[in-house]
Length: 396
Ligand code: 3PG
Image (cartoon, rainbow, N blue to C red):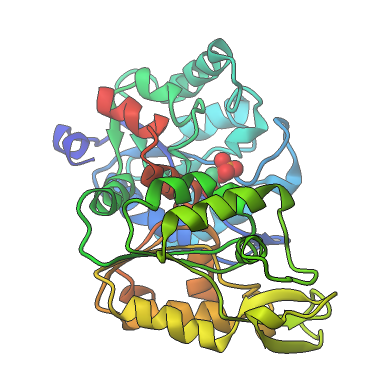
């Protein structure tokens, strides 16, 4: 981005791929973290006099316009935060997009409608993506530039993330650079002990990252829905808790390989129903109730995990410890997050639900060293996978 600004952007059209994929409740944005994280790059471009064309996705529409996935609420919030007008084109590369972009003055921002309303964005066929990328690029025309700032999507080989970068002078935005710099600290030589906290629903989603992190970490603290499959692998009865039966053998192998690196809950909060007014009971891991579900880690576990976190030099946290959206099952996530806040460690929160949990639980965001905007992207980075949206920029 510094290079681009150094060349001068005044009067130039700059296409910015941002990740504005925020959670919505109807038309209400419930966490605007990703929009706020996109502001510094947009502000630097507008201050330089660029005509900024932002492209982004929302959710996973089926490759056709769908009002449910319109970026309208996002455009409104972006305008509010930028303190200016953000016109939303009603299509992606059609008449509305063209006239909206043509109407942009220096230092103004426009947003194209959800990029995934066009099936070519996510097509596996390179020529289809290429054709779509050329249409996107033609919006900014001669003298245009591309800024990749949607860290949350750099693991996707999609037209607006990957293909456009070969068709225009392409630059990494401030957010992408900041994210990569922090995550490289974790894949390089992190301060020890390196403690990773993993939660979320499924072991299968986290298997690749567990396999890749195990040799590099000192402790892996497991919570969330995925801990019950590990506990079942230890031979414990888990009642009606979430179970991925086909992952039990894998969990057994991981536990055997990990020695004492993997820590599992010593107690859990169980409920007779998945609801905020269910009957609940905190039980030891060996005494889980039949027909009840584990929906959070218990206080003994929080204390043990907090002890491990207090000693950490580096912490990476991805995935809530329980169903934090429902008050009776929020304490595990709150307790672990508080322990990270209280530790002296270099701490990174890996996007998605954990970043939302930090904000929903009212924890001080500035007490974490970094809150990533990328869920899947930060995990794939830590796995050591090549991220197409980064690789294409590095190839230049
Ligand atoms: C995310 O929410 O992790 C990013 O916005 C990417 O979304 P996707 O998983 O639908 O590609």
